[in-house]
Image 1 (tube, helix red, strand yellow):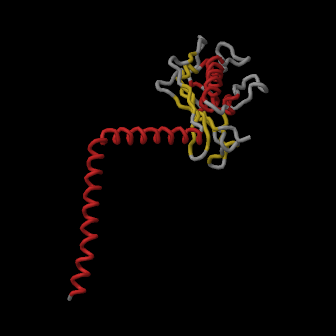
Image 2: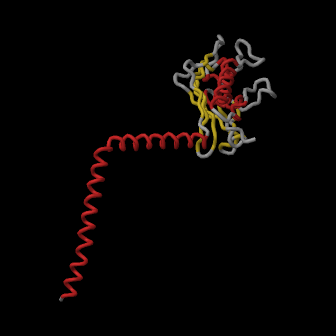
Length: 218
């Protein structure tokens, strides 16, 4: 009994001391929290915002999202107009695969607005240094926003002013006869593939067309 009581007495002493130390520590933490709570909240909020911005910047660098959005759209000054609805029938082409499209065992075709859209894609992907109707510049090689904007402006001006050499009254030929304004050009990534998105207004169309141009695979 003696040793049992002594043992119990010896164990109670450090436990009581530990409780006292924990109480003092808890009071200290409570005082610190109440005193510096506003600062801590602001600090954590700023840290979270910095982290969020950093993640977004890193994601943009990874997928290289770039966009040209002018305060004023680039407009065509060409007087003779050709409605997008009046574009003649053409062979349907898949620019992502680089081949003609087969439909029901025969070559597919496009006309009207679809034919106009196909020509925008075709001319944007045609090198202007090699073909008179080509509009492709270095926008597909742009590695930063400044380079992209400069090339986007050049491409927009090329689109709204294109008039082919055989264009004449009654037989207009060239995107400049149809495109009224280029509102924006951006690079985006869809399903792991890079595209240009060209937002434009065209004669005969009452809404903005967003034309997707695949990045060249060749």
